[in-house]
Image (cartoon, rainbow, N blue to C red):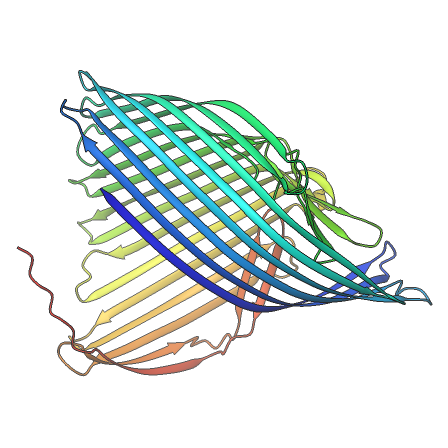
Length: 517
């Protein structure tokens, strides 16, 4: 019997200010809006997990029952004022002020119940019957009032209670085979997904679907230090309550959010291949992981903007989404020269539809990372490391070709850590970064040099004096560049420049560790 539980309380107060500027086709400023909001959110979450496992009289026969319940209760109060000025490019601009208060209460309850029964068939074969029941209920209670002031005052009141219930029933029949080095798991799953949602005073939207999901796992361990795993699974995900909501959230008059109750469920086929190899004689380690996901009926955001520059955000099913990840790393100790090398390679390929400039683009993004680390084997008194990392992102758009971009980052470093005595230690590291992006005119090059000197005043190092030297080359700048499917940006921030920190640390006497028998 296993019982786990936790409780989380999280209260946040924050202030947000947003200024919006909108230009017409002649690049004239047509509309501005200045929005200020005070927000308060209180959240309480409770989670209880129960699990019971029992072996039965016959060897290999067992059953398992599990129950997990999560209750998430949160309230949010948003007080917002928006000043809108239209027709700024004319001689007769107009202004309006919108004062809005939105008080929301959310209660989400999730109950998961699972039952597993195993029956031995002989010759290392087992038959498994597994059942998973899931109920998720979202309750939303909203009270919103808006006052729009132009030449006169206009009051609007929005009050509703909303409920979204989702049930999932999965019944799985599986066969496992475990002769020793080889372990296989093959199952067929029958899944029923049903939803009921809508405003309580109106007729509910109801949907129910039946799906057949295959599952297969193969694990092979030929010798000690080697492991190979191949997984396949089909999953079906319904749109969440916000994506399929039948009500509109217009607390922000320039960014209206609404759901799409006609959304279909996403279907994903996922393949995973893992390899772990460690040769104890040559001290060679080799690890790989490959993931491929193929999703149909992918749910993406949809965006529309009207003549008054009011943006409406919703959701839609938009074709297929593909994602491929690969991680490769290997390293080895070269005992003859006292050196260890580690090589890593990470690749990600994504292909999906995305709304760019109000048009549906087929967006393809490729990320590649290569790194090499060299370090000495004996680190008792001297630790030396040197390495290089090269990463690149290449993103293309099917319609907005002028947004295609390529971004690279190179990083080289050398680190030296020396214990001159048992009390005196010295550490220094030099990094050299190079940023190249075809969307920016200048390519950035940034060297950074830091160092640390520490001296223990006592033998047990309970009193430690440390001198830290930051940015010895006084470059006085931090650079961050990012490139994703939705945006690319460069951030340059002025830092403190060269500075020195002197610190003293005293370690209080603690309890001595007991020696394990």
